Image (cartoon, rainbow, N blue to C red; front, side, top):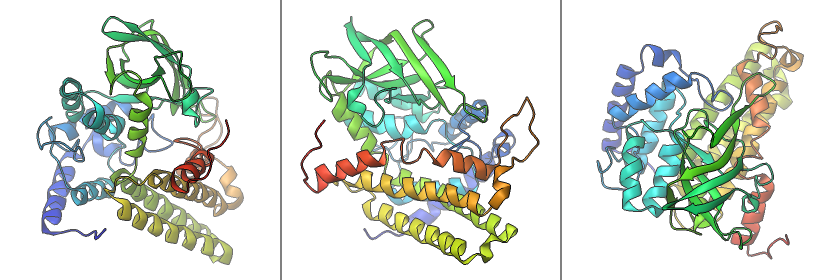
Length: 396
């Protein structure tokens, strides 16, 4: 792809920069850099208000493939979406609590939902008023999503959902959850699944339990459904696997470039730590830092090459393998450049803050999960082997 910014893109950049400068003030400015991986829980209330601020400016839904303004959003070209992401990262604006609704659920409704569902949900997402979480993984069905056990039975015009989901980000803040559940008990594996939309405000029917970590924080949650009402099914009953896989494929593209902007900032912080502590004089560490920089550039070029491409069955898996391993190695480097000091927290231990961590320590611990969540490396390699190389399917 011949990727470059034209005059219209630079005008768009000036508009985005001016808007961010004028609105990222006060409480919003105080949350600069907050809300990314490892700090999803921080400042959630103010970040929710920030979603409404973004919505009022029309900045939610730039990448939606629909008529401009149809749901209260503006629509940007691929290059303009990249421009917005770059400017957003440049000012270190707060991590988005609405990204699941904007970047995963909304494109799925545009592709597979009906018009009534689009008109019900897209305007609320575009205004920053309704937040979403994702109900996929279960205790015994993580990377092997087809093995899920959550069930849904017909009840009038909708369904009643029972089961458990795990590793659910933002479940405590979300208004709705899109849930993959088995609606045909006579089918096995990926057959007989449906993609359901479930309101989270159902006392006695839905329970959210934060998963507390060593740091005392809770990045993820368990969600228990006990006959929870699900008034909407997307794509029709039994089409859940097709809809769910289409959603996962949409996690590449511009969102991958946005992620890489954050990676570049983290790499810069690790390099700065190496310079401050003198580790940069170690030739082995210097070579590893340079390699991280080179690999990040390669990832960017690969993302640009596949930007907007359709029909490449292996592209999402290749992207996941690239960034998962890269980010994990960066976390390890963050500790290596610190040496023995990496084992010490930023403040003395106390009962109130027993596991206080600094940014690089959080980076290291969070990246241990990078090759697991979103589909483990083993699953990604199986997908490439079977769908791209045409190798025999793995016996299950």
